Image (cartoon, rainbow, N blue to C red; front, side, top):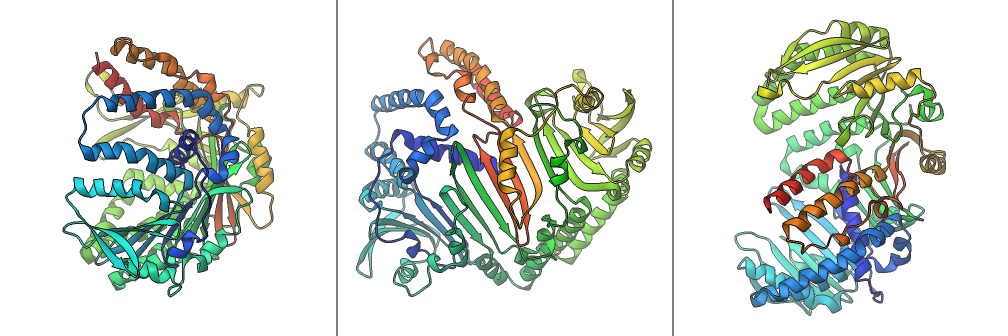
Length: 605
């Protein structure tokens, strides 16, 4: 989910400046010289200008040019033309003038952000934003900040600090301020409880800056491809701040194993037509505690499944597939430990005892007992697949786990009895399908004219795998493809094989996870309904909406190629390498948005 959200932000940062890009000369002072080296979060976006040629070669930029660029410019003209016909107060008119210029310069020249937490008990923290080479554009950002202050009735004053004229906004009824000024060729913005004095101490070398930080120096080595976004989360200053909450906080840090995750670093950039990213979750060497213990180590990998696809169930062709390691027993143990300790901290010893009692009751329930008997027979290798042939809008998602003892699991499933969970009645019916038993569940009581819940969760043991899906059909597909060897089935794409050969065989790392998804299916699905939606809007607006602005489906899908992510365990980190054309949500995640869009369109009539 984090990657999908990041992809949306990345797409905006990539395609928006195509309309407004204009190079600006670089400065002489590194923005990082203004950031305290102890900040817990550092993020830098270089801007579009230095990476224009590389970004314009990507598949994402091609989709923009083919499908959206002309429509974007025409719709933008119509939008500004509409605003010209609406009488606006003077302050809002200033917003109209300055906002496009500020956004243009922000995306063109980038930004650097740092976050530092001083005291969580008093909520003392500082967010530092430096806009490189944007001192000349101060008037645009200052106008927006003044507009924000005016809307909220905040007072804007000027203060003199070390021969610098600094603007200040006092956020009423809080200890928070907003400061901004120009430092060399940069624009500096502070949001938080601290004064500019500390930032100026960093600038003058009295306090070590980010340039001296260990994790910044590691980032400077680069990932091996051209990057425009990089950053880190430094665990040490966050934990030092949390310890101010008292001894219980220190215990909680130990239970969670947060000291065993010293930092997270990341890069984003381009490699040919692909958007590349690298995320490293840095870890202490094993053994680890708490959450850190859940990260896979180098003891076991999934290389054998890649090298011999017959070890996997025959999955549907063109499926989105994730293959990974997950230790259910270890996860359950750590989860219980964390839940009990959290209850003790938040609501005292009685709270911990109550949580422990609830967990014991759950363990003694029919579902809990079944899970307790089942877990010892589960291996640590899992897969998730989702194919449009198995169900529209991701209803065909199937989950599978490798079994240590498939015969024992069949016996356990044969003993399933109806039970209640959260006031829902769960019943089981066994169906035979080509020599395999499908265990189909019925959920709940009848719901008026619609009968039972419209899902039939299904379990089955096929060879050495326990499979689960919301309906029987995805599992039936596995059985059919198992029998019919000539039927098409999933296999890694050429892009995935090339990427794996490029990264997974490097010394010092081991493949522990793999994901592949093809965005062309989602784009074709969305593109297929675009004309219908455009027609509805055209009709609802009395023919005013120009449907020719909407792109053809092939313009959206043709430049794309499969997205691939590899998870590599190294002695002191988990490295996540991604190579994407366009990371889009599966069709399931689009459903709420589509539903709202249809509702809006029909309400227009």
